[in-house]
Length: 88
Image 1 (cartoon, rainbow, N blue to C red):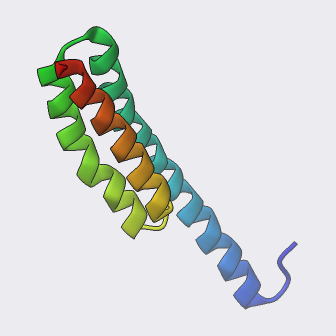
Image 2: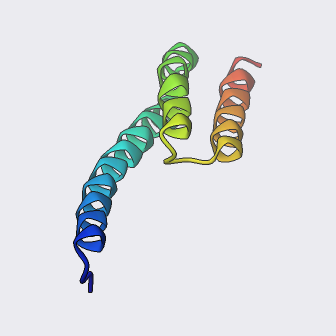
């Protein structure tokens, strides 16, 4: 348990950050799920559009420290290759 005033403040800050990061992660997952649903639905145009809107959201997660850069790049790369394969 936090005892000093500074450690109590840090605990409060960590709590707030956790909430913000949780919301951000949830938002990113929602965008990725929309791409997945469009891919499974077989609609390439919708999947491409969903991917286009998901990309900046995922990369914003990187700049905010929610995701690692390589993780985000891997997710985007795999989704884009799946969307691309739908046209073939």
